Image 1 (cartoon, helix red, strand yellow):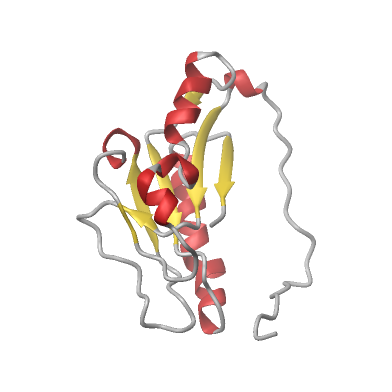
Image 2 (spheres, one colour):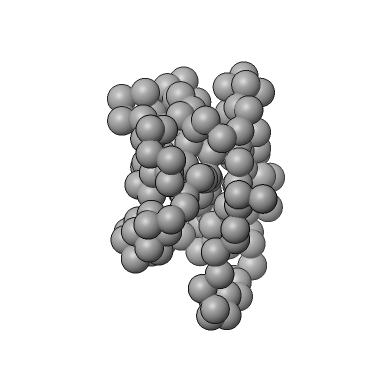
Length: 146
C-alpha cells in the first residue's frame, strides 16, 4: 500500500533495434546494487534510495563485487552474480554468435528510488549512463531488475 508507481504522463521512449542482434554491441544495466568493492556502497540510510550509479568493469567484476541493496534478498546473487548481472551467460552468447559484442563497461543502480530522487535519476544519472553507452557504441541494453 505504501508503494505508489510514478508515471511521467509521457509515452515510453522506444528505439527499435535496426541491426541484427549478432551484429550488435550489448551492455547490461542492473538495478541490483552490485558494485566493485573499491567503489562506494549505495546509500542505504536514505529512505528514498540512492539515485547514483556505479560503472562496472566486465573484466574484473566476477572476482571483485559486493551488493549493497537492502530491498531484496540477494543471498543467491552473492553466490552467482549471473543472477543479476549475467555477464558470463552473455559472453557465452557472444561466443556462439548470438550477440555481436559484449561491452567492457556496464552500469548498476540501486533499484529503490523514490520521492525527490526520481527527478535526479531521470535528469542526471540516467542521462549520464545513456551518454556513456552511446560513447561506447552500445546498440542494445539488457536491463536486469532486482
